[in-house]
Every structure is written in structure tokens, then in C-alpha cells.
Image (cartoon, rainbow, N blue to C red):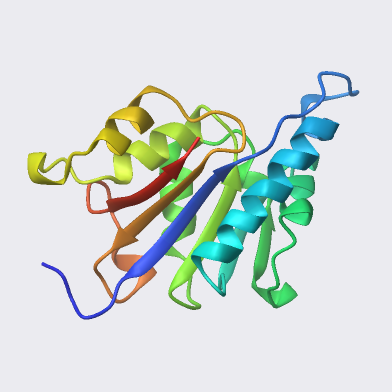
Length: 170
């Protein structure tokens, strides 16, 4: 049941990364990836004046994606976590439920877990199904941005199939 306020979760897959690095973890963004991240940063800034908390995988490509977004945020509210690297949706949910600050958050991570996480957060109520949700069900390409609203007061209350897809930008 909708309350007077809601939480907004933005989910962003890292931008295009190079195939050339010593390890997968150390892959940097390509020039195209840098441009993708700049464009998504502009989109994010137009959607919301402030992101309260950012959860970011510690991999080089996610950290670089974050830097090219050029978002203004208190550095203490950026949580870089090795556990978010190529993790399962359950870990992403647990990390989201541990957010304690603000009404908006951004997660920057990797597929396949990030795609499954985004889709599994969405309501399965047929009245809430949309063309956007159908599109998201098929793929989460590099640097795709998902915006989901949750009608609850605290991040700890978020669970599977409770979110409403507000926007999807592949």
C-alpha cells in the first residue's frame, strides 16, 4: 500500500570496459564507456538533484563509471565493496537493505546478477506490468540505468517484487 513517501533505487550497470587487462577485475573503461557514463550522469542529474547513498563494486570499471557520472555526493556516503563484484542478486538485496541514509540510492555493478536483481525487485502484479518492464526482462546492457520506487520508509523493508519501475534507460 503506497505511503506518503517512497525510496528511489537507481541501478546502473558499469559502462563499456576494455577486454585488455591483467584480470577481469582490473578492466578499465573504453573511450565509448567513458562517454556512456558521462551521458548517464547527465541523465541522473536531470532525474534527481541528489543521490544520498552509492553502493559500488570495487572493480576498476565500476569505479571509473562512478567517476565519469560526476555526481555530487558526500564521499562518506559512497560505499565501495568487493562483495558487489560479480555477486548474486541476494547479496545486492542484502546490501540494499543495509542502507541507513537518505531516500535515494544508486548501485553500480555487474551482470548477470545485477540484471536479475533489478528484475526481481519489480512487482509481479499484472496491473504494474509495462512495456518498460517487458524490455528490462530481456536485457540490462552496459551502462543501462533502472529507476525503481519502493513505497516504504526504510531500506531494510525492501524485498523482492515490491518495486515499481519508474524508468529504464538501456
